[in-house]
Image 1: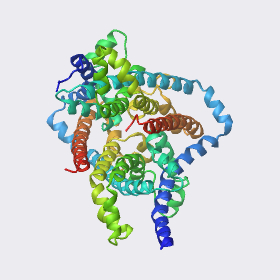
Image 2 (image 1 turned 180 degrees about the horizontal axis):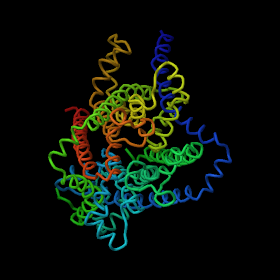
Image 3 (image 1 turned 60 degrees about the horizontal axis):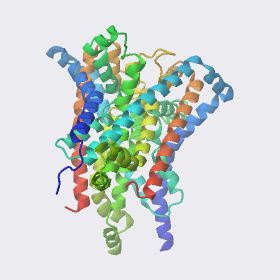
Image 4 (image 1 turned 90 degrees about the vertical axis):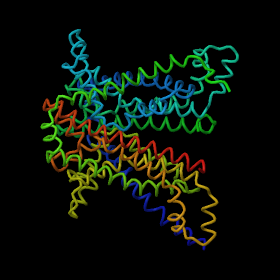
Length: 273
Length: 273
């Protein structure tokens, strides 16, 4: 009896483990093998390539801009949605989540449609020397749109589960709304805030579809890391492409694992549900 | 009971709504607006063009098929992960997040290499007459890869919440493990499975980065809608791109409404109503 259960359990578990192995582990192994195929020489040459360095710099600046905007908004949205009652709350949440369902290509198109040189806003800005579409500013905007929901969703979920008891206590003790937000709500939201921020950062560094539309793809000027390795790959420099892709993958995976560890730590302490 | 004892509602709500309007609503509305110059004849010609119809058929079909595959694999994986005492469970659980953590362009580069004519999996498959890269099969595989975490992470908590006594009663009454799965677990997890399917569909329908490398992008055969939008834009046909994007936004809207309805249902099921 005992053995039958064991054998049955193994037959139920083994195939899916194998399938997940093929579906998920093999791609990961492919990135690593591809990156190491060129040897250390290729990696060093890549680090010295001015176009690659420019791409890394642009990706970092763009990700920083997106994270700053979306993290600030995440705290604001968490406070507003979790602590107040108002009509249209469901609609507001749906709009915040919308970028998760919108194709990144459409997010890029949205920036072109709003700030292209032939639009009123884009034309006015261009006349004042500010270029958005096909420039770093547009790349940052498109990336912000695509990664908009991550911090907000996490913070809203945590603060909603928390209720308003702490805030009401702080207000009862004479704190202002701003003091309550800053000294009570923000510290309470820390776990979900950091979690969302790390995911947002990883997504922003790796954003490809939206940036492809809005970038103009000028090497050394408007190429981010993903555009840069896509370009290298299409130029049949696949060793360099894989080295750069593996570097990006490593950063994204470390960010995701850190987010995961933080979430588990917070859950163990009862901060996250 | 006091209503809204926390002051500052108007300011917080106004600030939140302003950011949502600036980052999400206005840019997406600008996409729809920029389609307005298209004449009815041009609209008909564009939407009924064989190339457009093929792209929509491929995009919706491949996303639906990939999400269906994800439902089967995701349920299986979630069930295995819920089994206590499985060796390596933590590692398997972390692996499930990988497709979400991996930047889409890295996934695209990797999958097209792995399943390409010289890849670890692509070469043996091709030797057996199965071409994956540059075919719709490759697109389905890439989308199934990307969508899998959404199903697992939706179904996992639902399985954990299932009343254990139902399961025990069924096996106590003599049902086999498969019988319990088919007659108790799956029916109870159905709302979560449907939500997981819808979330995977929402993610995969607009997917760009992980697909374009493996798709080969032959017009009418392996060209997805997001790429077709980009092609129109590169040919200076922004209105045409906007028309296609508007159709995609309507599909996304329908999916969001479906997901919201499903999630309300799950809450009701959990509350036992």
